[in-house]
Image (cartoon, rainbow, N blue to C red):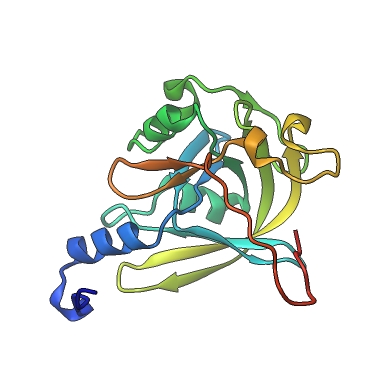
Length: 209
């Protein structure tokens, strides 16, 4: 076995740190976040620094990095309105995801640029992406500033899921072969969840899913 290469963080610049971080913390789920600004103009953007953090109530965090000296539209809109929708990225949507990551003027809709359909949410004002089989309607729980950037952790509380019945099995659980989610790697690379593994727990707790 080869001796591992030690790479201390204090020997890396920001670019080198980012490459190792995004190349080793993989695969990452993608929060495709739709918001509205104070003029009810929609915004849509993907974030892969994203994970679930709580069950009761259901909560998760999204890390939003600054755009130079300015706040991104997503963060500013959530600050103004306190609501957003996380749309699940599945196969066939990576092209629109890349388009929605572009730095567009606030008055230009990522939905229109990416050829996506807006549909109303049930409990929040921001629309969801009709082409996504799962929309998670959320409200802001809190912001947490991290790092020297700083990145802002958006802590969201889930109010409701809108789920296409086609991605659920007969027990109401998500069927991943039907959902076909896409995860983020590094650079221009994404990953499909098509080669699944199953390992049963060996203690008394059993699977929580």
